Length: 511
Image 1 (cartoon, rainbow, N blue to C red):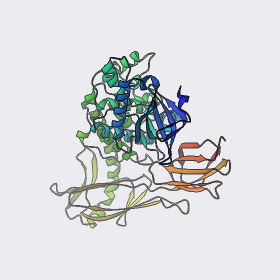
Image 2 (spheres, rainbow, N blue to C red):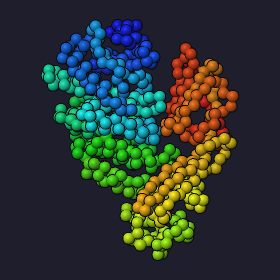
Image 3 (cartoon, one colour):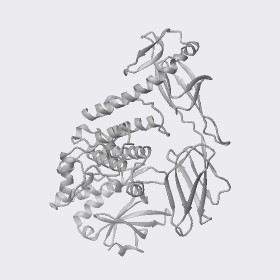
Image 4 (tube, rainbow, N blue to C red):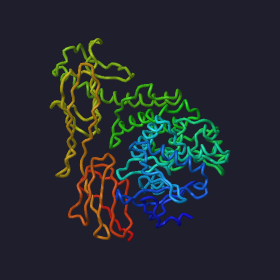
């Protein structure tokens, strides 16, 4: 029974509480007296710890995982054995994706994209190091205090797989609901199997359901091999078409049609995140090189979608450029020979001065919220987003601003300096935003609070009661409230809107 280890010490670790149980191990919260931090201690169940071959493989794979040093891979501190217990100690991360989905059902798309970028980055690194996870799922994606996704349990599935192969034991390696088709067939795996499982995970986190379900694992495995997954937008219409395309590319049956690597998936997700901006309100996107999107069928579908978005932006931006031709010529555009509407290299329309086709091409794109007023070297550009390929080389200062409704808000103006070279293409992202107010009514009154955003630009904490409402930049925040002898209160998607009306948060802690 897992209670057998409570209150004991393994190595230097004091075991304080049971926090989970898997197929092969129990998980405990323990205390590291040297680092003075809590750790998660994973201990093999007795039937596996007593098998010398299984123990040998478990310890070898845990040691391999411990050498994976990446910010989005859980850090393993110790791999060891004491008496009959085989264990390893790792970062204590009490909240995971499965916990969030139990509360929220689905994640907001911006949070979901950031999580997928973190996991794809971790997988890309591990695959380059020759390690395939084999069991990516909601339970194995955790979150640190800053909201970063952390992948856990590298090496566990490989240890089980190697043991099953060596002994001929009939053991299911991985989780059937997240199997790749090649995993379901018992074929050799590479990193693209993990990307399929990540696609299932993102499908679940964006729709609240799994793409394939059944009464037994054989039926679920058959669906992974034979049936097309439903389109996520038929379940949750609020999902963007671009994210749906990325999910479906991960879920291609043929590994060759998926993303080639975690890095390639990251690129597609980053372009989508950049397009959304922090307020998910802009329509500016720079499409990645064709070579970065692998898989002939689904990558063509994704690239077509990205180009359609780019054209929408160019047509909208071109209208404003008609009124700026005089401004461009005053800035030094001596090679201007006329003004017209013409196609650009991607098939969109760009309005502005025509140039000699032999002249160097310089592109400056500004991604800004639609309500932001823009100036370049003091000259007004109108409201963003904005694009030009007619600026001469030189240094420029961009100022983006939105109206201030509250005194003391220092995020309403954003200034960026840029130098354009002779042949240059640059994208500036600015996000000026107003501020809002947050008031808190908390019991007990001596509680402490912390609030931080997902970008890491705001992280504040203090005691209660508040003397005045908090002044915060507009955006999404995580909140944690704690008091001695009480369960913590956590809110992962608190939205602060600009304006004088304060958002009120009322919390009664369970003590």
